Image (cartoon, rainbow, N blue to C red; front, side, top):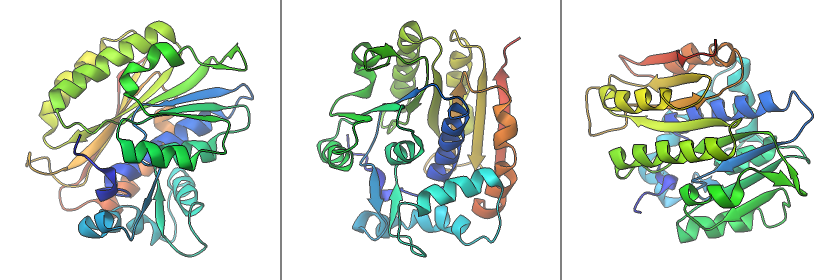
Length: 285
């Protein structure tokens, strides 16, 4: 793989993804029973905003930094910004936490997480980051291939019923990636049917993802919600015009949790022609 997330850390896609991720984990914490997180493509876990990669693209400047500059934002967005700030010195933005670090911050003592990463350097960074956190297992492995070993999840020999599967692959082979995602989700549901899923997807031209969304709705899940932010019109296949999170088996009325964030993201991160979408594609009867 040639993809390195350090070029894109803190951009508009990360903002959307991590707002949704933290809101999902907060919903799990309303009950005392433990939850489990499987992060199939963990990345490095933390990204320095002064790194050569980050300075080359400056994508965080048009993403998280724009939100940091706002005096007030909806509570679901403020919660995300506080989590990002918690990984930085007071009053400064030095680094951006990736999804595994944000999950670990949100977890309680009884919760557990497994993070997979195939690239050598990123996997080494993850292992160093969580070396002293007994709640987190880091696997230098293909996240799609670990379902049998990790699921159904257990803590101290006891099965964990609830949890989140976060799938955020690099999409270097886009159509092939969608097929791998669908196959993996189907396998996971066979081993852990009560799992919730948050699947990030890029949007260059939206019509190209419609087949994937239809296929996802045919999976044996009770509900499907799509959350999308296009920061500009989807009229060019050559750049990332937006992204979405496809949520399978999300909490009841989860759209109402996210709804206040959507106009704020459009206003502060969008260019002319920006749009958002928050829509149930399938709902439990």
